[in-house]
Image (cartoon, rainbow, N blue to C red):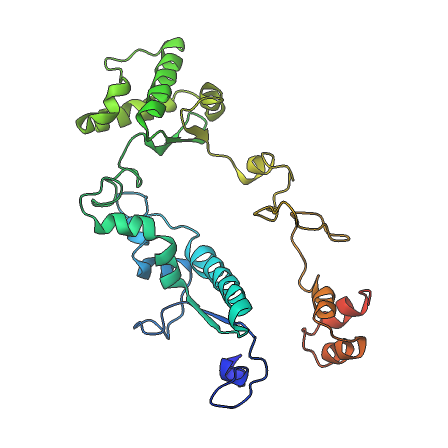
Amino acid sequence: MERMGLGPDLFYDNDGKKGLNDRLIYARIAGFPPDSPYKFMAGHELSYLATSGVLSMLPGSPEKPAGAILADFAGGGLMCATGILLAVVERTKSGRGQVVDVNLVAGTRYVSSYPLLHHVASTSSILGGPRGTNLYDGGAPFYDIYTCSDGQWISVACLEPEFFAIFIERFNTALQASGVKSEWIPTHKTQSRKKDWPKLRGYLEDGFRRMPRDFWASIFHGSDACAMPVLTPEEASQVGPSGSLCPAPHPHLSRTPPLPQEGVQLGSTLEPGTHTMQVLIEVGLSRDEIEKLTLDGAFGNDSYITISRSKL
């Protein structure tokens, strides 16, 4: 937009000069911070994670951390949407719009405030130590992911002592009922003895590998053991009410839920331009104005067919 001469200065009132639309909220997203040495460089999700300091804290193998979908959608999209909403709320008081500036690195750092602040506090057991030694990054055997006999996984997240007690009691009972014998059997007290964590990890790894994922899921189902099967996208789609692989709109608002659109299944992927006509009508454009914008290519080369078929 700004390269085409459509920057925010064109729209806002400034130095006695009337802008085109002083109520406009102008949002822009960049990859790297504007004052960083990387500002003119190309990047992707891993690039922004790497330069945010967050990638170095994520779990993974001893050789390298694992990537995550965090920078693009949370640090960028979510932060930009939040900024726009904040500007809309502020506009109800001032009557004026403003620029919402977002870059994916700073946004990633902000949504990762919890782990970053714990990392700053070197005495924190949550994420204060080197990667792989803390509670939340795979250092604790009772907060990790384990492979089962069928190659699928179980997530274990029983941080609280009362939850760990339920988990280890059910785990021990299942192994004993299956005829598994062990020279060392952990108790609920094992969680608080960090020197026993390596032994506990080996015990859990060996035990989980003896049975398939769904066996273990049935052992912990309905309890507060905080042990859940790692579901595939297809399996997870059956947990929600929509039953669709495409996520449904969220959060759900009690008075103004998302309205089903004609010919569009809730939770399905929308085709580009699906709601162009509705938006144009809502902002008050006439049929002639819409037709002219369409013919001028304002909505893309293929938009004429889509819009001309819509109901005016």
